[in-house]
Image (cartoon, rainbow, N blue to C red):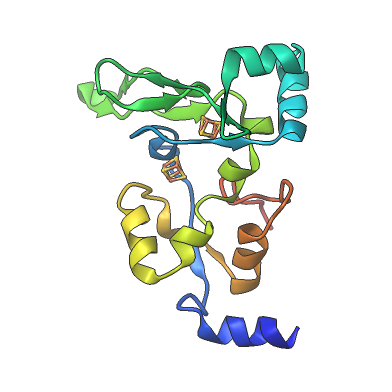
Length: 174
Ligand code: SF4
Ligand code: SF4
């Protein structure tokens, strides 16, 4: 407990950080990367998809250094590597033919892996302010909206299983 207090005194985000997801989908695409998924999460995903865990691995996962990561699809138009579960709603046109930006989402949202649930409160983003602000250039939800206390940030950073009320869910009404 004493050490927690000392740690908290050292952080650059002592007063908390803001984040509200705008559903731009940037964190689910981009350069090649990894979305790690545990065996327990594969079982939950399989139940959600109503297929077996073996089929889930076969269709949606790849094995990297003894762990599982979700597959990616390369978008030929952009060259980006999209998570296999990334969805895009077609762009709609608003009044006066004003183009409304398309929204992207996650087709397995209720069972998305821990890694997706704890963004952006990852150790690498929290290591220093410049890392945080570099990540915020692609994730426009960072530094906006809902305020997270240092205690909540650390609970998310250190989570080993799905946290209640994860940051990328809609804020609960009070
Ligand atoms: S599982 Fe969902 S939230 Fe996670 S990277 Fe894929 S599309 Fe994004
Ligand atoms: S977490 Fe950030 S990058 Fe990902 S969809 Fe939300 S606002 Fe966009």
